[in-house]
Image 1: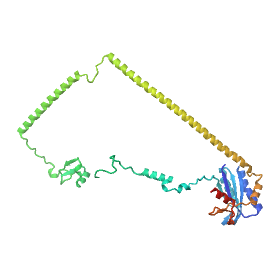
Image 2: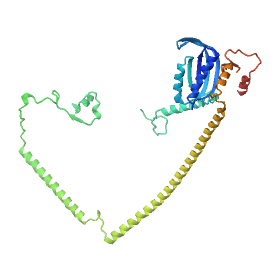
Image 3: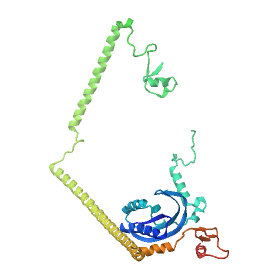
Image 4: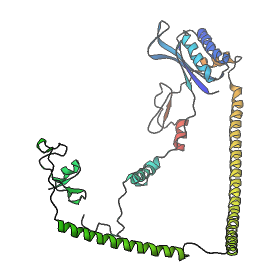
Length: 147
Length: 225
């Protein structure tokens, strides 16, 4: 099962309602055979812009993230279910991927152009593309007769 | 006037470039194109045949007759000679007795068999070498596959082991309420800022820390770099 992260923005509401909404949200994941790893609370924050959903205008939201594992086939159902929940302003499900391993190559990039590997490669390609010149096999580097 | 037979080349002639060409002929129609028919006034004209001089004709006839007679005589002589040569010569076919023929055949057979034996020996050696190479290749590939499979299994087992460790901290239906309460009680803030000295300022509304006071992150960052 791949890992996913659910980013939630819940509407402004009292704590018992908040708890019940979170519980509903989490249970729908568990009911679909998912595993919840972590629930994080980012606190109540002003929204960057007015958001109108389910017939209401929201300016403040509660931010949560739920890290979970689930079958990929269930993700669309979950998203659809959350989009129907009137307590949820915004939701987004991201696939968690391992960050790529990046090696620092600054010392190579700072070398003079002639020593850089990619420049050497470019020179090689350029030489390869050059048209072949006919060789007279006369041992001279010029054409001895009138042209 | 010289003109090329092909129309296109005729145009080239006008630029004096035709000199190298070989396909030339003299053209005598200059006022009338080739495809026009005979003029009406000349349609039924039968050109008068010039009378030949009788003495000259007789002389030519005599010379021709002489020539033909001589040529025929030489030809028949050469043919006769060739026929005699063909009958007497043995250059184009061998004359052998049956014993000689048999001996020749046996010699050929023996030589052929020797060649075959030599080639068979070479082929045997080559096939053996190829089989050995193939065996080594297969063995190497099998070993590589085994190692790869083992590595893959180890990797998977490592994942399973880690996941088993993590499974203790999974949130289930039993501890869901507690997890939600814990999350609501402890809001987190992943925002941070970093300045040119490598100071890390945690939090959404964090300001610069007091001078001389180094955070744990900064110490780690400076020692790492």
